[in-house]
Each structure stands twice: as structure tokens, then as C-alpha cells.
Image (cartoon, rainbow, N blue to C red; front, side, top):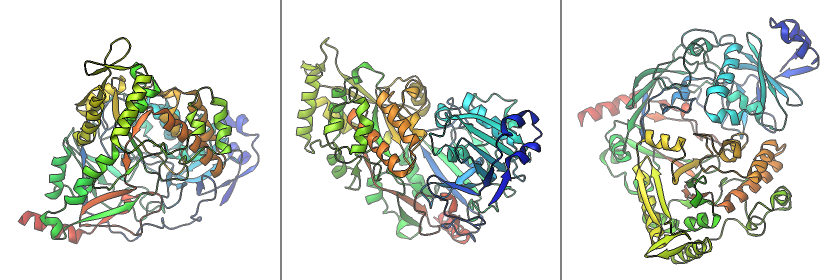
Length: 610
């Protein structure tokens, strides 16, 4: 740990116009190598590598994966237009990087030193002078300032929510940048500004940033874009001249030479490609395939193996999402009735081989999930919004106790629809004006069809006219941007330390913002307030209380139809990969894997012979 005297630094600045602003800060502020959200980072100054990697991992080989149900038309992942290529984030470095063996600790990547104001109103980063973009240009503080302003002004709405409390970003000198915060309410903000991807100013300042492009633009990360076949394939090549390859945060990582992503419109074709050895890595999200699908020659011969990795983060909420912007979904009784048509027990027994669990919280499998009746601390947060919220938020326990028996569920659903003013006429459920209740579920991947159809059949038993529409990814995104849908499938991944990203998930500010993650268009003062309280939490206990209160409100609002989760990631690979064990506690780091090139050559030889 070293210390910098602020007045001394200001005297050395070439940007003399800023000196009066900072000259008053004469206290010594420590320069550190890492930050943790609540405590101190676990790894000391001078650590050699992350604890879960193999520092002697060899370089070489390739990994081919699939992207299913989609195509791409852009290598710019930061804007709302176009469909970005998968894996493109691997070409960019950030100021800090996370150790997934800790709940939320970050260490210097582009930044070699970090100074955090004791009052958490600003943070400074000392950039590594050796940092370079792929075209050889140095990466400087001007690139950081440029990247922040560009993403806030022209980038995806996510950035405006995530960094809403950043008031200013200033280049103090060529290798020092300072972020100033509007308040110190967000404890995680100093850490998450370190997640900002840094773009090359010299490249983008003369180009149209908001227009999709297929150019192989430069980043500063461990991989370059090697080749682009629009809609079919993108290949990334490990940069042997990568400036940061020997940093402690990178030792034992980024070992595979070529990362190949092949695009398939149908997951069954991708599955056949894997069995044939065209693909050599897959995450298997289909329970039936995992249970009975691996009886093929390569698996029996030991050339393919399966790996199960326990989730280190809360299980993600995957759900059918209502478009609350539409009148028919404004009545909470209608939304609850539709929830009751989703028959998870039948699906689990008949399609999923009893491998899944029903998802009953937006923070499932974590200490942040609401449970039972609200605590006194939760009541204190909820009470100011009593008039807005359902009384069940206060007096009914969660998980929500709906009956398991389908007939009971549909009976309850029918009663709710009658209360909402619907009735059955000529076999159709209609409102008071005779308008039928019609529901369209829109997908871009046929893999969910077998989950949707049973729900639509159950809706039809209530007189609801339901249909499934499967569209290509571009049409899906266009309709999503214009809010032209009834129900879609959405995912709401959570970390062990939720924070600023919750604004984009749930708050009114993003309800009418195209391509934000507030897919349902939720506008609720109570939710807005709880999200801000979550962000401002100054202890683990405060965070848990605010998150449980938010979870409770979301659940009793029936803004989605929650689906299911497994609590683990199922992976199938051709047996040419090695990886360190045990896996890290709080995440999965594929960048720590490597290829055994001898086994790779043998597999390739046997595949050619077959």
C-alpha cells in the first residue's frame, strides 16, 4: 500500500484548470490494489494469481461452442440497434476485474492503483502505462473519459441506470482518472465503475457509434476478433502480444488459442453437431437430453464427459413476462389467474425427469429471498407504501401457497377472472364489453415450445384464446423494442450483491425505455423506493432486508409467471479440456480452462477415422 498526497499530485497536473477544484483535498488517501464491497479483499498486495487457477496451465488448442436460436449483425455490443455477436466482451479490458472466489472483491486490471475517498464521494484509478489496444495505441485516461461519456450518451440504457450516480469523470493526467459521485448512497458504485469497458477513443471518435457494424474493431483484452461470418460464425484469437498477460489477475487464465462460436437456428441441430464433434463444449439446459440423451458412441467410448457445477450465485429467475403496458394485464387478478395455469408439477414429472425445482423468489437460493411473513425491519420499509401495495404483502407468507393440484388451480383462476369482470360466452372468456381475452406468447427459440403449449391448453380450459408465435431473433428484438408483445420469456440473473442494476430491472425510469431490462414495463413508486434503499444499503443486514422487501413486493404483484431452476450448471464437453478443481465458490470461470493438445489431437484423429 502506498500513499499519495493530493496537493502534490495536483501540482504535477498538466490540466491546471482543475487544480482549484482538487487543491483543497490535502489529506493522504491510500492507494490500494483491490476493493471489497463490505470488508477487505482477501488477496494481499503482491498476490501471484487467483487461488482457483492453475498458474502453469498451458496455452493452445481451440474451443467451439454454439449460439442457438439467433444470428448476429453487429460486433458492437454496447448499443440498442442490431444483434451483437456472442462473446464480443472478451476483446475488452476493464479497470478492475472480479475474483469469483470471493462474494464481491475486485482487483486492478487496467488500473494498477486505486484511491477511494473515505466518504466514498470519488474514486481515482492509476492506469498501467504499459496498457495497449490491439492496434498498438496506448490506453490512457482520455480513453476512460471518452468511453464513459460515449456509453452514457449513445449506449444501451443499461449504462445510464447502472452509472446514474456518477456526476463527472475527469482525466487528471495521462494515466490518472477520477470518477466523482453525486452521493455516497450506493456502496457498490466505486466497485462497479471499475467494470466499465474501455473503448479506444482514436478509433471510435471518427465513426458512427450508434450504427451496427461488423468491423473487427480493436479492444485491449486478451482476445482479438479473428474472423466474422455474419449470422454464421465469429472467431476470437488469443493475442500473444496481449499487454496484460502476466498480471496476477490473468495468470493461469485466457489459455485457449481460438474461441469459436457457431450459430444454429435450432437447438436439435446444435445437439447433433455436438455429438458429431463439430462442437466441443455445450451447456445442457434441456433436462431430457441430460437424463437420457448421452447414449451415443463417443460418450460410451469416453470421448465425451459431463460436468456438474453448483451455482455459486442466486438461481436466476426465468419467467414468462407480462407486458404491463397492455390494458388486459393491468388487473392483478388476471395476472394471478394466468400464473395458476402454469402447471410445474406436470412439466417436471413428464418433461424434466424431476430434475428442476419451482422458482419462488427473484433471489432464489440466497439469504436475500423473502420467506414467511415480513420482519419488523421489512415492515418499516414497506409501511410508507401500504396504500399502493396489496395487503397480502403485509399479512401473507411467501413462498406463495397456490395449490399443486391443477383442477384446484384452474378453479381458483376462474374465480379470479370472474372477480376481474370476465365471463364465459360461447366457450370464450370475454370482458364486460364482450372482448375476448387473447394471449400470445412470443419466442425466438422453439426449445421452449413444449413448456408453453401445456400452459396454453390450460388457459383454453378457462376460455382464454392463447397462441404461440415463434419469430426470428431480429423480429423478436424489433417487437421487443416497440413493446409489441403480450408475454415473452425473460431472465433476471442476480448476484450475491445486487445493486445499481436493479434500477434497470424494475424501476419506473426504465419502464418505457426500449431494450431496457424492465421488460414488463413496471411502474411502482414502492418498487422504486425499495430499489434505492437496496442500493444505499450500508451493511449486509440492510441489504438483505431491503432485498427481501423488494422480493416480497415483486412476488405479490404477479408481474411474471416464474418457471423453474436446477441450482447447478450442466456442461458436456469432448474430453480435451482440463480445468482446476474445486471450482470457485461464487461463479464459474471458463477462462481458467485449458486444452490438453495431445488429447485434442487424438480426438481429431478418431473423428476423422469415423
